[in-house]
Length: 96
Image 1: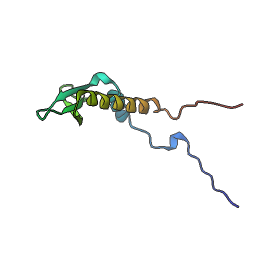
Image 2 (image 1 turned 90 degrees about the vertical axis):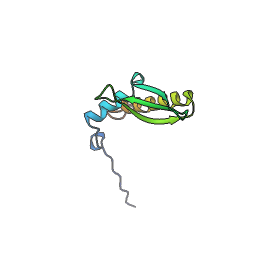
Image 3 (image 1 turned 90 degrees about the horizontal axis):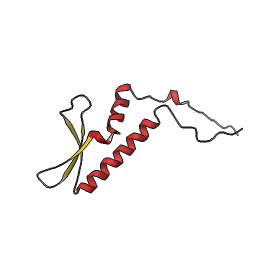
Image 4 (image 1 turned 135 degrees about the vertical axis):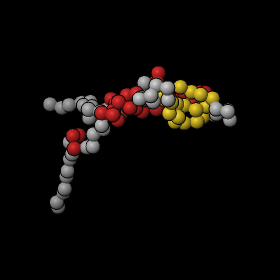
């Protein structure tokens, strides 16, 4: 029986650009977010453009402020985790 086993190091994976990492860090910061109410009664979540502080980029629409804030919290958590793992996997246990 022949088995084929292959591993890849973290550096062989496509690495995000500095601009991409900067955007992730920007989005992971809750102070860069806001919620606006639209004319139809929905609430829209927006984050501030990283290059133009007067421009906001819309992301989601929700029926209530609570749902909109939950969407922001989930997005912030998602991008915070991406930023945490930029340098590769985290060693959680080693054996001797």
